Amino acid sequence: MRFVASLVTALVVVGAAPQMASAQAAYQAPRTADGTPDLQGIWQVRNTSAAFDLEDHSGALGIPPGRSVIVDPADGKIPYRPEALAKRQENFKNRKAADTLNKCYMPGVPRITYLDFPFQIFQTPKYTLITYEYIHIYRTIFTNGSKHIDGLDFWLGDPRGYWDGDSLVVDVTDFNDQTWFDAAGDYHSDKLHVVERYTRTGPDTLQYEATIEDPAVFTRAWKISLPLYRHTERNFRLLEYECQAYADEAAKGSH
Amino acid sequence: MSSRLLKPILTALLSFTLTPAFAQPPAPAPGPGPGGPGNGGVPAIFGGPRHVPGGPVQHLADGHPDMQGFWNAGNNGGAVFEVQNHPSGRVPFFGPGKGAIVDPTDGFIPYQLWAAAKAKDTFEHNLAEEPELHCYESGVPKQLYVQFGFQIFQPANYVVLTWEFMHAYRIIPTDGRPHIPSNIKLFQGDSVGHWEGDTLVVDTTNLNDRTWYDTVGNFHSDVEHVLERFTEVDSNTIKYEATVDDTKVLTKPFKIAFELYKNTDPKYEQMEFACIEGNEDVTHYTKDKGGKADVKVK
Image 1 (cartoon, each protein chain N blue to C red):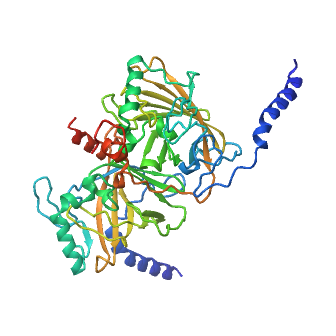
Image 2 (cartoon, one colour):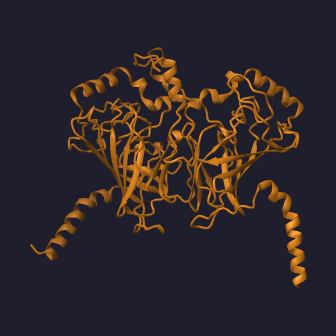
């Protein structure tokens, strides 16, 4: 019996090893009062190039160079269908006018996560609430077992979450086709389906992963992964970045 | 008069006063969505709640009242259109009405003379400047009486409010932290809260001068200071009061008060409110679109 237990333990360890290595799950997150992993705090990406282009890219005026944050497929490239890739190139050429982010519209998911602005996670037993400094967006992630809405579409999709060990997993559907993944024209259709995974990897780090599928645009699902960092500055708090109000000021020439 | 005698008389008087209200024919069935009629001012089309009195106030493990849920401003006399009394019915689409101001008792904003003139001029010439037409957040206290309702969350050390309208939110820390420096100005201001028994008290400063109290030009400056009190009186009702001061604009503070009603539909969820993503409001007010505004906006 003792032998069987050891064997089972050994098998479990062997089986789990690759996943643990990728998720850096050795760290055990503290728990909230209701026993779920505590993700609360103010977080922000430190990788400022992903929002410009998720793939490997050189620098340009105002654009920091960067390595791909795509971990699957292994070549770090978005697996476009051939006809969809042409549309991506066209988007890139017309990006100034075609990227709805430049009109102060909501940036969609996962793009909102790696824009270079802080966001704050709050948890209650039924909800995980994320408030973003960028254009006062919030996302209410239902962790109460409720189901997706049918027949509507949203700029930020419809997020339904559940806890999987140390991770918050968020299934997001019901997107429109108006947002991009980055400023390089990487896009999706309204068939987009995103599965986000938030996993604490240390006291001040949170790994963010998003698996993206859209059969109208991609040949297979693909995945990005990048760390988020906690703001530990004294008195740090979310302020406001009011894109539309600033654009109006600029148009009037008052500032 | 002994209190034993007083009580039945008061009960009788109250019954007499209340009976006519209850004797009215039943209200029509609520329209689509969570709203319903009979809420004292906000039409059902704007998410006005059907109020159901609740049970005793519930408390969370931390001892504070559990205000979590979906709420709607009720009985505010159409303050979302005009916060002060509007006896002339000057508000488009909304008849004469009472605002939400309970002090001064005349229901009007105690403006300094120059400010009264500015509000009048804005109403007559610049309604296209109305901040929400441009998709700005509503500011404080207006955010509490906008349409479509809001949700209260009580995570550890915070009270967080999220609105469907303009996907606005307010984060109210209750951990005793001080306000941010006064040179930082925000549409929603900087709020800090504390509990006084079952009442949440919220002090808000750092407001900018880019929001109005309503849709018709009633305004404040960037030294506006708001003290709000949220008192849960039963599990479906919060008494809301806000004292508003603004030494640049007002001769003295004014106070608004109304009740917040819980939306008790267990399946209700807030939807995404996109504004600038499809906004055409501003075009309706300019002269070239038949409006009366003097400014040409975008």
